[in-house]
Length: 88
Image 1 (cartoon, rainbow, N blue to C red):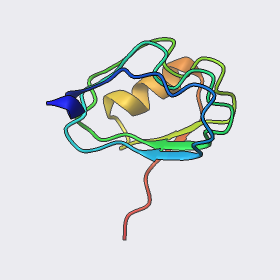
Image 2 (cartoon, helix red, strand yellow):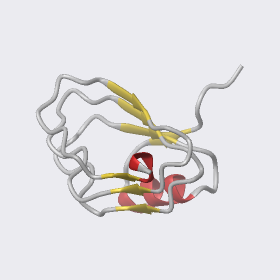
Image 3 (cartoon, one colour):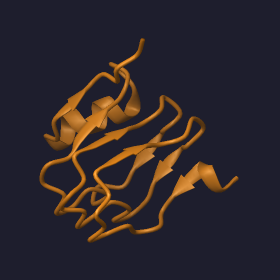
């Protein structure tokens, strides 16, 4: 399915926040690189791979993911600010 892999580059976009769909598995190379306006992205537990340069030159991004999930651990390893998504 198209939602299994996010690899289209949205660089230099005015987009400020992204909520990735459940079932998304891969954030590909430079998928969100050069997105100077991107402030937050929420990633589902289904994500199992994020390219090392997926958020290159995206200085203000905060990754929201479940504690202990792949996305959470990846953000921690990369030194990218991260938190848990807001849920009611």
